[in-house]
Amino acid sequence: MFGQNTLKTFTKNPKNDILAGITVSLAMIPEVVAFAFVAQISPIVALFGAFIIGMISALFGGRPGLISGAAGAVAVIFVHMIQEGHAKGLLFDSPVENMGYFYLLAAVVLMGIIQILAGVFKLGKFVRLIPHPVMLGFVNGLAIVIFMAQLGMFKENTKDLFGQNMRQTESQELIYNVNNNSVNDLISDTQLFSIDGQTVKNSTTGEAVFIISDHQVYDVNTKKVVFNYEDNGFYSVKDSGVVKSTMQGKKLYIMIGLVLLTMLIIWGLPRLTKKMPAALTAILIVTLISIFGGLESINVGDFIRDGGGAGLNGFDELSSKLNLGELWSHLPFNLDTLKFIAPYAFLAASVGLIETLMTMNLVDELTDTRGDGNRECVAQGAGNMVSGIFGGTGGCGMIGQTVININAGGRGRLSGVMMAVTLLTFILFADKYIEQVPIAALVGVMFMMVIETFAWSSFRIMKKIPVSDAVVLVIVSVVTVIFDLAIAVFVGVIISALAFAWENAKKIRARKRIQNDGTKTYEIWGPLFFGSITAFNEKFDIKNDPDNVEIDFVEARVSDHSAIEAIFIIVEKYQAEGKTIRLKHLSEDCKILLYKANPKFKDVIVEAIDDPRYHLAANPEKFTKPLSEYNV
Image (cartoon, rainbow, N blue to C red; front, side, top):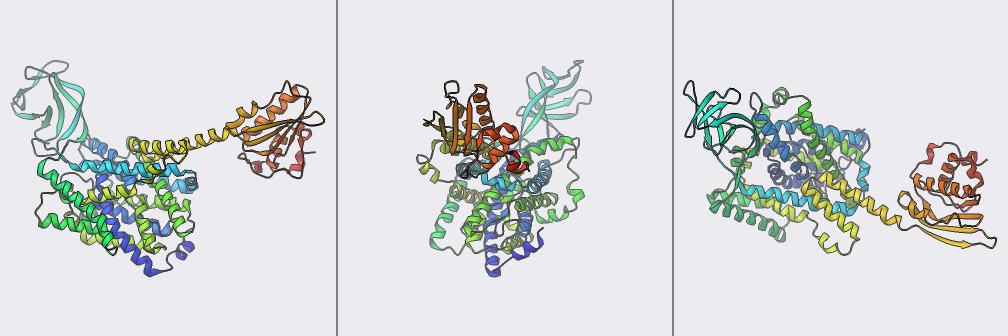
């Protein structure tokens, strides 16, 4: 399937492809690392996933020159799942740290399987049905979601009395009654524990077993929250993640200053020279200022060590866990796990394919060539599945990096392969340097990407496009922010389709005239389909029409089976009134279906040499007999 075509498209200009691949990798690194923080995973996990997905999609994808990696459109979908996964891991008999990471791997593998199936069943072509207003809303919504995710970086983890990250817990069921500092069994009301200040002691042994702080009850041995404390008792808890508070004072001002400096460099450097990648240069400058200036700024290493990133903290740890049995031993393989990850995997697969296929269409336009959407679906799925199996995150086609690659001269598969190889080199030999990068620099990169991604032209054209298109654009943007990108695109396509059907349903017209012999002729204009059937039926005055009636479809287009059924019913009504009716200028497809419905139409339909030729949505090729066999 892939062999000959892959070799043919591998490269036509090795020099351009190699240089373009290296350029893209430099632009890829800061963005992938920044997206890792959107999904709250380790940068090494994101970079490793970007390497695998980028390599497989470059070699076997349906669009040479398209660049894939760990993209924000997919990352934002997994944020909530990872948080919920951490909470589920703490509820196991043997608590598992960073359990959300292992759920992420399973979801990425399932995401890949879904994408492969989409390619096998040739669903890639349906991206052509996405209207332009939906695409604008998609891009705007994506920009807003990424912007909102970055605002979370201006918060820091609150610490509990043990110096650990404080957990947000919600009270569930009452476990013990509390009365006058006595903790009693619910059924027997026997005293089990006594409360002495913040300490909860065993009533029998007098040993301290729990500590109370901020209405939470901690186990003194595990230092984990086991109950919520309220006036009347101890309650079981649901863990809702780490408690965060907004940065204050000097730390906040340094964060804002470094973000603005990063954005200023990215904005200004291309105006001076385009030989250096602006994002990477900005990150290097801000990192050096932070290190040598002794600024109290949170860097990537601090973020990871403070529990900000789920998964693996370095390549050495990644290498040690390429033993798949060890890597996957923490995940419970049961129906509950499948139910938990399936919705996220489906949404990520949908969003990934939509963004990838939209990027592929963009490359088609830029290069005046045509890619294979179904093949791209299979390659993206294979890349995600392999990435998940070996400990990487999921991804998809990346619009920004792909445009950089095309503009730099990358046309063959070699450009994508070179990007992945350069990325792997960075992971192998420079992973420790990532830890020195300030979070503020990555936030600045993402803010600039938001500004560049958002379709600002949509404000200018709002009053120049049809109202229905403007409504679709706004709705898709809003749904993207409230729900997710996949649902937004589906909603946008459905609304656009309904708006199109409604507008065309109003365009059916009928010109009426009486011929010299007394025959009344209805000349039908406009599209006849399911939406215009009601208006079509209202054109006829069956009871008051003369005995001879003719319906001429010369300026109409009969589009679907509903239209055929409407014609059939009109004929039956006229014949039930004892009147003669003739149908003129129907296409061959219409005639076949009407003859099949009832042979009496051979006396109703008038054959003419100027009959139109067009096809119906209801495919008449299923009716294998030629027209002549129906009209006998």
